[in-house]
Image 1: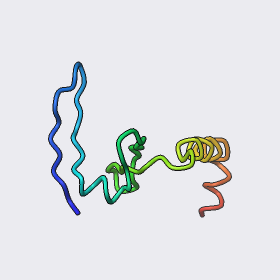
Image 2: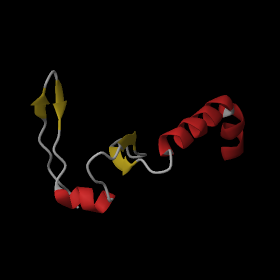
Image 3: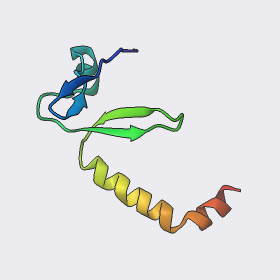
Image 4: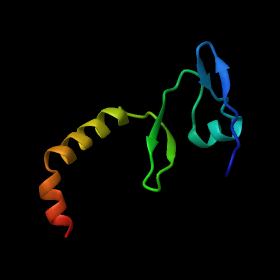
Amino acid sequence: MILKLKLRKVGNSLGVVIPKKALAKLDATEGDTLLLSESPDGGFRFTLDKENFADQMAVAEDIANRYRNALNELAK
């Protein structure tokens, strides 16, 4: 599914309206928190914040940063 989203002015910021189709696919409703993360192909990905996903990713990023050299050696 490819959806074209238009940026709109909201106060001093910009925002987008997410169509019902996309919200249904995300299983998101009003009041839910969405996460915007980088995808491996250089784009971005929206996901629904379930079970503290952001906290889990922060821990994973911290581990990856601390053990960067060891992980690079293991990847060879």
